[in-house]
Image 1 (cartoon, helix red, strand yellow):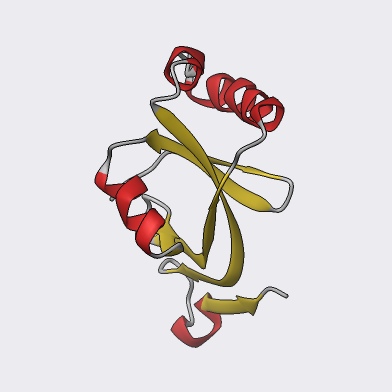
Image 2 (image 1 turned 90 degrees about the horizontal axis):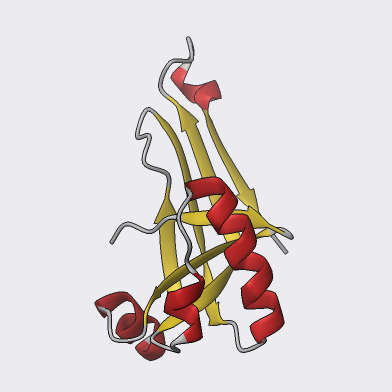
Length: 112
């Protein structure tokens, strides 16, 4: 499922409705894979999604998110019908299909 997110403090942050399939799946198993929308310049991260309970952190995320995407995410979070999740990457893959040498165009990082 697609998500819009932000990169902040060495993690990917995103929000979703409390009753969405994403939120329900994360509640059962927090392991997830997230990718960019550009398949020809792919960045894929594997990690564990953690629901953010600290409302002051959620407010900071909302400000950054609103600057990036426009609009205002605050009303959704204020009503407690949405959650903010933090994904700490464990493994990251990147690939640039425009590179001359495919073997040099793929990179894998393990994050500890």
